Length: 138
Image (cartoon, rainbow, N blue to C red; front, side, top):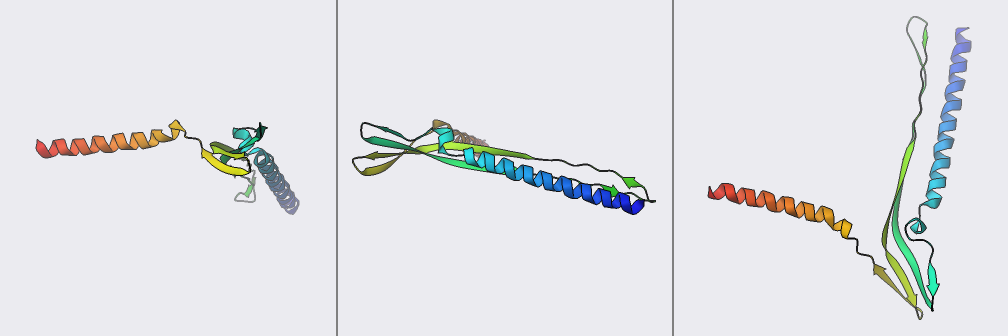
């Protein structure tokens, strides 16, 4: 009886881990297919002999998990469980490629929001510097 239970637990663990691996792989491929510049800008546009192709930085990552049961002491079996999953995609516009009269030129899009960390760091540095100067002269 004990060996049958152990065999059943092993089979259940193998089946469960296979499903979660397949699930995460399927999720990654589906999201990865949609993670593109189209998610930020849309498709390339041609009008009046000028073609504009969007350019973006796209990053994605995934995590996973699984679980299993453990054998307890004194011949008792402690049941266990597990699960997991997660992921995310981040897409940021960088600019566009403009094709006109056979010439291509990349044009960067300036994002004012990207300056916020720099402004905060500069403000903090100035505050620390002024505070240090104040302590020197008092």
